[in-house]
Image (tube, rainbow, N blue to C red; front, side):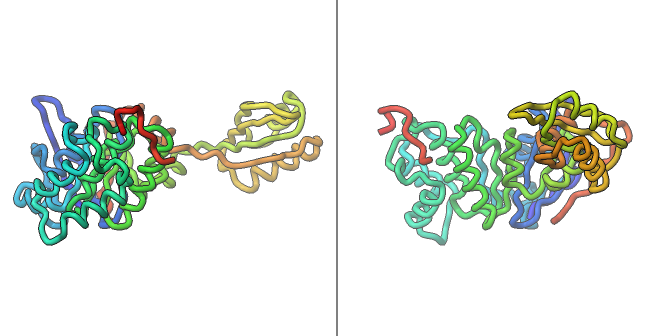
Length: 335
């Protein structure tokens, strides 16, 4: 659906994008991550035709963004970090205006807008002026304009920025549903959101792709050999027994409650059944039963911090592209 090959963007001597390549397959939800200034928004702006590239190609559904910009734009719905809203319009007026602006043909305007209004949950504010809406509703209106015309591709840049936890969950659920019918590129600094929604993640730093895989595989690849345990017993006795176990590198106490302590045990090898078995018998024979035990895996946030805080090595080779509660009004002016 989307193919980016050797894409670069230069501002004077500064390279915002440095020869990146990746693909997004039809129906995929891709998480696009990176620290501020990494090149995420530049990439998305080039895909949408808002910016031109210095070199490289972008094709959407087989159409090149330079050769057929109108065909590409017709297939893309874009929600930038700041939704392009006209505050003096009502939601109804705004969506009617955008429908005409996109020159959408072949479908009933009234029915189409009605379906999208229902899908993103803005029916109760449909007749209100946009300037009177809360942040959450403004984001939803922005998402609604991106959906007008049923574009095959949705590019969402920080769609939940500034929202409260309930609003984030609601928008996240909407994006999941949209992923059943659209190809989605989602950029967000809320990494739990990316983990919950995206099938694949690309991490970009200094204009270059530094990681690309599923959230699960990234977590496994960057996890340390650590076992979390809750053990019934006195702290010093428990930690001493664990430290004396073969294969243990370190023990860290992370909590205490009701006669039990929570520890994280780092191994010098794999945290496998054999290692767990050794710890079990050591503690059981010392009359210190294990109440809970699980392997500690790195979160996507851990992976992101580790990758983006480290320098890119000189011999770095870029990876090959893979195809493949209701919200309340905020004040009386909202009514």
